[in-house]
Length: 158
Length: 417
Image (cartoon, rainbow over all chains, first blue to last red; front, side, top):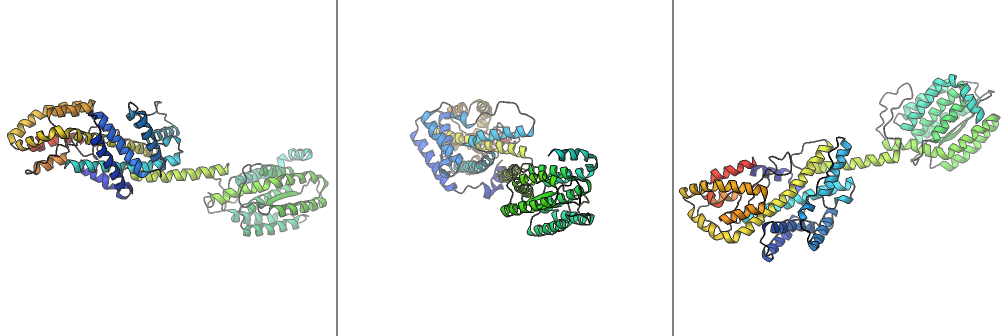
């Protein structure tokens, strides 16, 4: 519902707003433009993948190398573009650990930390403390990016 | 060493109460510096002084010790008085029960714990104390209380004093003399160790307000390996801070449990990533469908004003909508292609209402119908309301919006609710 989305967006206006939203917007729009005009691929999935990659790339690019997740993301995107892996989506949505959930709270925390590490780019080589830091920044950036894309969609559609 | 152990065995029975007290006190000293030093010390001193037998040769030393204790206490050693008073207590017992081996034991155990060492202010002063009028088997208790920073001078004074005392004292005490020397190296560490909990834990001693009659300061858990426990605590605090900051980012988060918070965070990250994916697809759908559909859209927008057309279109579209929904479940691409084949596209509800209200301006970018059916397949298990909320779009087809749009609008929107 729209009301709920507005609630969600207005919930933490200060904490969710990333400082470089304008920069992200410019990068992303430029990437979109490039995609629309240069690609000849008409397959739906391929183009959507390109756009998604562009979204992450613009997000990471605008943050720069200040954060470890952004550098890791950039590295991953660049290497992936060179390798042209068949299904980059799988790497994006990393598989959950296959082992069954152990009831012990510590084990559960370790599992969760592991899952989080796989979700956040560059998270596998971080200790818990830093992982949480990076997650915070990553979430903030991601939500900004989502709102940005939403705004683009809205503006284009109307 | 041997005679002392024999002595100890001999006096085991008589030593029982004092030994218990000694060990208890020792444990507490090891465990906690506590804030009750002053009270503790006062109690010790008050209990000690009158009980000290008059004929004690070392009584002068005892008063000297006491004065020096107070001095050091004023200088700011919490633990030293603790240790000293405890040792004094032991000394007292020692005198009463010839507990020299017990004190040896004490000194030994005191020397042991500070494996980690490294405290700021030491706790033990080298205070030679000799007791004893003419008792065999009396030993001079060498209370090693030294500050770390003033270790050297104390050591010097230690040895001289100790030697002097022992010269005055008893021959068999020479063996005891070795103990203090051994402990002199260790005591700074011991003192440091005992002091560190006091310094580090600062106030959080759980000793409580009223001074218990016994020298019982409640131990604070985790003091056994101090540097590690401190680091652990710091790390845990930092993690807690970050978790709190993260929790504020995640909307509608009211959990306080760490595990569930982590769960929410994970779900939220996955949800955001899915949103990016969905939005990229929606944008793509619009981009792909724009060109071929512009003409169709404009014509349909013009022609579809009539109710009849709208109604007919509506009926026809319900089946198509179902089909689209079905296709969307399996594969986004095929769904979009199906729509394109029919000359339709998806668009947001807001757009649809805008179109239906704007009767005179069928803008061609309209078919940039960048909407996406909000599937319930959003990853967050508890986000029944959350997941669709952000994209805030629903599947809708253009012709239907021009006609009885509301009916169609409501139908897809139920998916979101």
